[in-house]
Length: 83
Image (cartoon, rainbow, N blue to C red; front, top):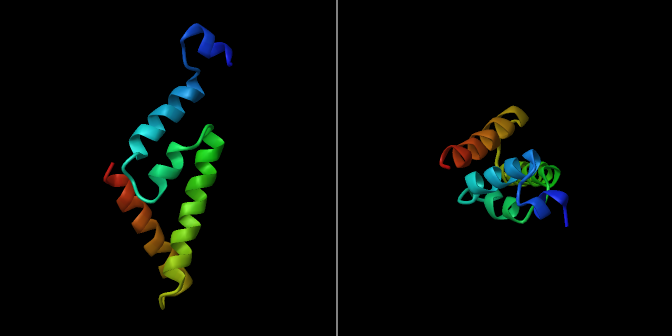
């Protein structure tokens, strides 16, 4: 058990993680994945994974590389802005 748990307080990183989980809870596809993360590093990796997954889905369409990246970012930002 972490010392912060024994004192009933959260560390800054734990507070940041909790806030991030709450803010992304309803955002698909990243919300449910972030909800399972135990560290901020895991959150970063899950977000990268989701970006690459969406980029791969877009890659099957006939876009240039720049258009694929732009479209994928729009999809991600649209999901985040709905939080």
